[in-house]
Length: 130
Figure 1 (cartoon, rainbow, N blue to C red):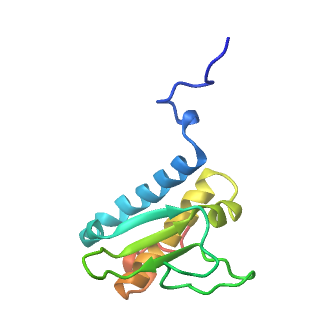
Figure 2 (figure 1 turned 120 degrees about the horizontal axis):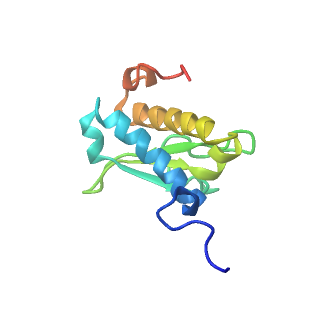
Figure 3 (figure 1 turned 90 degrees about the horizontal axis):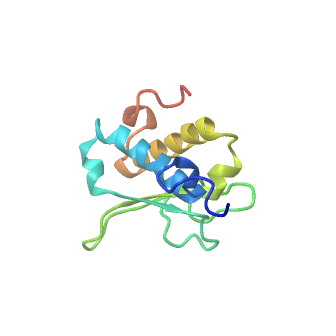
């Protein structure tokens, strides 16, 4: 019998990129309950950061020792602020879905805190507990 192992509506059929984007979305939704202004921020997932650091605010200009896990772009000229999470660097540092979800949430919290000028503990009081 030929065909997919699982039907499209089953989580097995989701690509790694889709699964990762879902983790980011879950984290954002969790924070939006406390910070409704996050609805005005674009959250993006990119596979890897650009070598030239273009398009990233915080963390731009990185080296082999410190590959960024995320970055921010401030709002300007009709464009909303952006939080970018880099999928491959996060995936490389984690083993399994739970660990990945925890690191994604930490990175989202850190980037939101940077964008809002707050501490990560202010953005999410449970920051660092995982």
